[in-house]
Length: 378
Image 1 (spheres, helix red, strand yellow):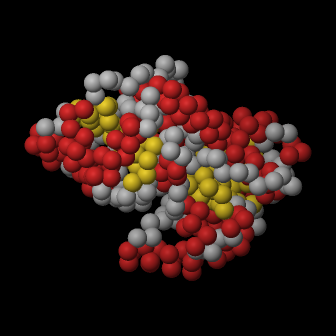
Image 2 (cartoon, one colour; image 1 turned 60 degrees about the horizontal axis):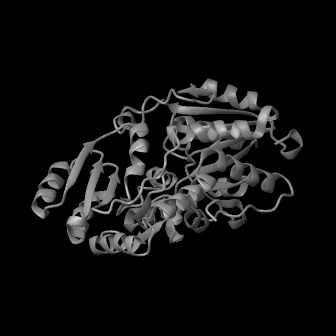
Image 3 (cartoon, rainbow, N blue to C red; image 1 turned 180 degrees about the vertical axis):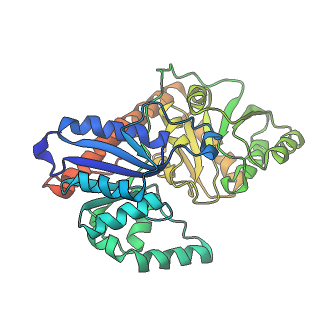
């Protein structure tokens, strides 16, 4: 991208924390725009210990130019240095002092900004309160935001519902680095289906509905659980009671999860909460050729509207999970040929490189005369 294609000479991504799910994308944006645009990151904190405990690592690998935990004075200086030709991209608009302080200065000084965010959970009374809060407090944001990168299935509907203009809202994702090594997608085992779950073993992730589904599948399927949490002992007992062959791996580093993903036929993400604003493990599975079954609570379930990739099920429905896995097997979606097709599709759309290209198209559209880009997953 050359200097004539955008009015920006700098882009700053404001992040709650250093994240391996964002670093590769930000680096890819820098590579995409080239030397004409300086791209950097400001993070409220490094990788939180709670996230490191989930296998995130310390975030030091391939980190883009990043300022961590700046003071208010440093925030003001960074914005001043950015000048009028700087686009500020905020990953969220509340809760983190670094982001809220920077956003207030950017708005006060009339600088260009965009929002990149998951939706807020609109379920129940608490969801209604969140809706009212966003509607009442975000009027200035709605008027002045250049564009909104709304993450996941529920992202665009949320932002449109609280008053952001439709033409400024774009569906978005967490765009990840491709698998570290090329893998020859394995053939489906004739003996057993290999089913996996990756995530915390807690109730809102819906993992408690997975073992009953496995019981319906019977001995032709085995389960691998990667992660830990308060439900572990209950799940161990449940697996023994149901006679389900289950491997409990505990928490594994992201790199090990990626290396193991090609071994599985189906990844299941049975969330019963919209806490999974995206669900990066879905992208990792598809890039490995693995089919996915996810509840419609998961943001990344939007990728499964294409039958080649998997199935979307109602949250909290074990029988629906079992039926979806059976249907994937019956229709040939777990064959080696289907795996190769799925992997190719995902690598063209879900990598950091693909996300940077999509981001560039959005910028061209919003600041120039380029046409609105089609949704990244189409």
